[in-house]
Image 1 (cartoon, helix red, strand yellow):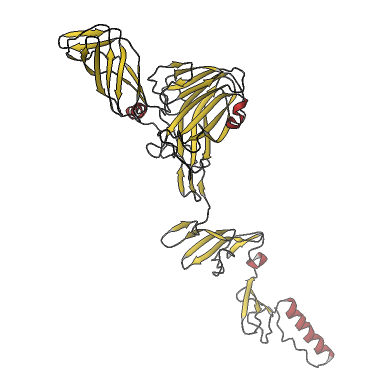
Image 2 (spheres, helix red, strand yellow; image 1 turned 180 degrees about the vertical axis):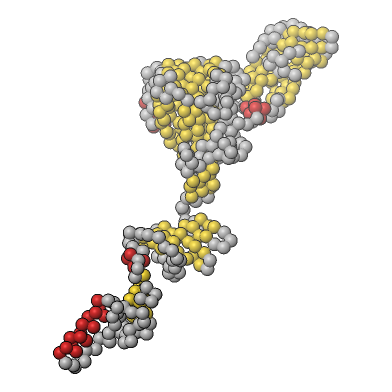
Length: 497
């Protein structure tokens, strides 16, 4: 230990040498000693052996500043390579979102700062993203178009806040749908086939579904899932199977489609289409959404293409998910017949005429199986919505139902009789009626009658009921009232779009 006043006085040779050696000893020992040097200078070092600290004199030469601990490696200071702090770390509290107090040497506008009294802010790109206050935590406090998203194990949008759309999107709640009637597809589970269970033409088959074709032939049938089949969740009972035999031709095609009432459905919104599908051998299918503004509407053509997505389908059931943003209909004109609609097309076969609408799907033959079709708002495909089966049937009957069971009637003439009755459900519009039988069984008190050779004379229909005059070749009931004897329906009532 050595200290010196660093003043070399005029003195004899031996004394000068001793004084100089003492000064050098003080320098090499950092002025070490149990007490501070008696003479101090600005920026002078002092190894304080009493406290074990290395100190340096300040610029004003009126105080010592502690540098570190003499007995510890690196003077006990945190190295650039990192280490452990054993005390509090205090940082500049004047930091801002643009220049956070704790930031990165290559990204100085990203980090942590003091947003206010008792507030902590996190910034990226110079903008506050999260603020932790005394009574709330606020994300995106500046109101920028910045999304918040939580990923799941297999779903990148398990929870999402879409700032641009002002939407909260959640994949599911306890493994099920978020709320009732999210799905705008009716009979998406293919439970109802009031017209029959096998079709080969260009016609409605499964309730609400149009099985359309030109040139190409197809056979559409209802198929049942094997009991306990687990590939498609929710335990559906049926699926729709379309066997396509492609016939070469630019205008030939085969599609499965549903018309959704009111073209304003989802207009200007983001929507997600989802369904389960499989094929006999790997093939593509195309999905299209189209707007129809009704007769006399704008535009007047049957469909306006909103874009298509071509998807590869394999031989095992797989979930298909497509998200699209529908254009606004601002400035458009609706027709006068209430037949405006949004239509979902699932294309199986398409000639070159339809390249623009199908992403050049092309012509192909095979078996195409579809189940659990859903269209809902937002960018997340939630689990298929399982509505009560009676509710789903009522939704179907708004567009199509069988009529005759439970009707009452009376003789009008010797060769005609009338029937009247209320519909199972009110229909979308005044329906058209198609006779599907030529006999009518009636029950009178103590007497059953069968009217033979039945044909339609005239029909009067409303949204809710019908009065129908029928011709018959026999079975006079002498003007008496009667009711239908059995549940065989006499008419198909249709108010399809």
